[in-house]
Length: 468
Image 1 (cartoon, rainbow, N blue to C red):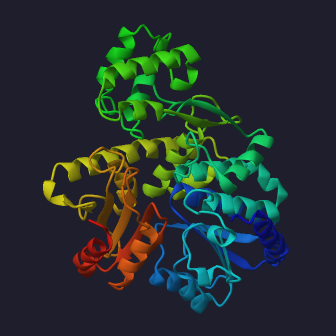
Image 2: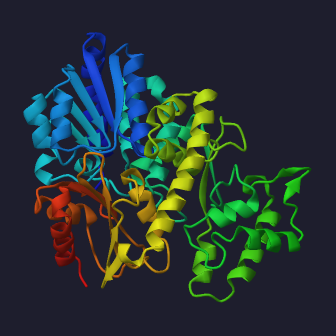
């Protein structure tokens, strides 16, 4: 049962401690994950403490393991704040930092760790950290308790939640603590919501490109088929341009959006799941009212994709700058990074699907051996796309990629139509520990890091734990 009062009280008790720490002049290191949720949560913490005149540095990391904890401790900061990571490394943190740290997170945590004084975790307050509370939301309420002006950044909590695919309520809506953060953003005039077409690039892409890029839900015969979509929309009489400028989905009237659906319905025909897929195109959209129309920051889901691209393409600093308000050079750099990110994912998917030896199916388990073909930072997004396709939407998909320190990065996803029950966080944690690795995450998306020599043993451990 969610305990918002307990969480509010915890932050209220932390706030004066954080302000005192900030004003003491002690050196603070904030460490956060590279994905959009991590960039948003790290930016929120950094902004709030900076407003309190803290001597704070923000750093991003693709993951954290015991070696990484030791490396952080060796840098001799006075205090550490970690967001969107470290919930599986609390013993190591305590040993290395002796209480000089705070973890704000939403990944699954051991019940015995939930009351640690240096941990604020969504699960400890009754929230499902995979659906109801992301790190950005947790960080937002922390930031607002430290610095009331942080309410001006409430939209970052919404962006982080959507980027972490926590829009799991009716009509792809936000629920739980995420909804509470959304209400803060709405009351501040930062975000408006509507039931509308949820097509990829709805603010920035021509209509036919938005349809072609949309893979959740996947439209068989439509997704990826840009030329056919353009021809069909043109034949319908829909005005796709205003003068010489392509129109976006957000510029269409209600009647025009209805026509788009009619065209798509004729294209998918009677294919299996077509009706469900078309219905899945509608849901709650989130418009950032203070951002310019027809930019990737106007739609909260697009904003999240932009930030994910920055983190995955080694441009986390650019993403943080955008979160903190840079709408000139950093935004331009982020948009270029987004283009490169999409190209990188396309190449990774092509490498995997063109080599049958890389993808093997064992009952309901799919193993994706991406070593040498998929960058470790793109592994998660690639698996998310795979599990949205008909071939894998009823599977547990586990992928491997070589990490920069020559270990193996593992990522896992479960398709929406998977008939069994699986907790990927536990699956990754238990299987990784069996081969001297570390793992964790959420029930529907999780990861691990293991020694390269133990990849086959890890695969066997996974297979033993997943129902056929």
